[in-house]
Image: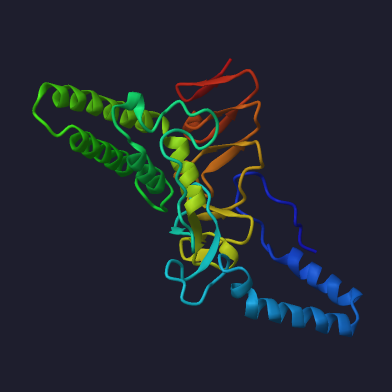
Length: 275
């Protein structure tokens, strides 16, 4: 029987990666009566026929305008993000979605930036939007509000417009510096990941990786265990190009020209592990 123990972290899989599923199938067939087997087969057929109707976001959907392959949950690093079906990006105006709002829609009553903030929220939550463009359009929208509210050439409008534009610049600076997490959250909520491979597995070169593996350095590889740190990637390695470091060790990505995990209490400096 094939050894199904995963290989070392950051290495390519062993042969017979589907042996576990074959073994499960044989076990099910041995322990089930003919009637149970036929019932299971009929259920599997029904699931295949009606699956796209029961779960429209998953699998290949007929006429799917965004994904001709398989839709799965989006995560950072997805090679082909596509907009979720029937999804509308939420908005809450200026300030964070939850918690105390220290960023008012109408700062000091100078201008009401609610519509600009609403558009910024929607932009962050629109799949494949560009954060810098969202932030730039945010400023342009606030600038237009300032010009609309203070259109005159008199002293009052000139001072009000100047103060309003400064607030717009402050708001834009805030989202540019501190809006990365909000943008990532918006993309996660607004996107699916489209894979040309069955079951949503990643495409690696011209082949599909088996379930549970990722593509790295042109090879299908086992990912790091939860909590471990991915160290690399080095393209000069023959296989996956990374190693997985335990949480208590330190990643030294260029030690001796290859990714290395420095021992506990050691640090990485100048491409070398040392105390």
